[in-house]
Image (cartoon, rainbow, N blue to C red):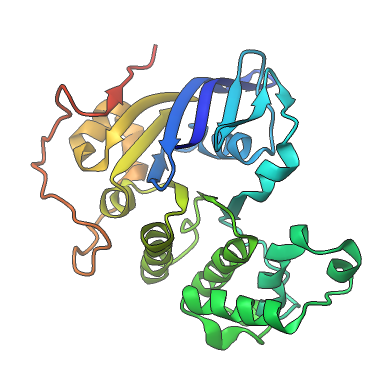
Length: 289
């Protein structure tokens, strides 16, 4: 089953062409990295898939086989489709003064009555499920702490727990590790990879450093100037190949040190430095006009 299908998606903001004829397809259960230099269109694409922006005429976005938007108009099942998509951002978006468990329970607001949600009236089973979700991301002990007392990595894991409470089938992670230290970034990526592997959740994660894509995702989609310029195996994205795609801008995509392979959540082949995609593989390379 196809979880995400984007066809001819274009978007302009004033004089800026943010997206230009983007076509991607992601199967259910895949964990795919989305990379690109600053201003390449990653966040804009994420927002369209999440249903937070509408494309232009000729654009189509399908979620789990249903039309989410077409020709700049939302489909009839938009509300239901939004409920199937969990989104986490770089900013965490937790309410700092509330306990962590309350923030996590916000993931079920779409499934309970308005009055219960307004007054925070969660039952015992729902609270137990929230603590279980926090355990799933490795921080059950912080359930009753104020969100403001958590480290950045803990806050991001709490945000992931909130999407688990939402029972979403697709998780969009828009640069979830951009503001974290390397150790916290690895823990967050470990959690995402484990959720994908054990629960089969489809995950599209936007990353600013390609090294995380190489380690955690078998497939990477690369954007440049609002266009797809690569879609294929992450292992093929050598530093020299990135330079071909992005020129000098590739420097911001490469970590100064390689990530350790120990504890790797997926097998990573040792690629030759000049490894290039070959005919017959699933990838496609589109040279920008």
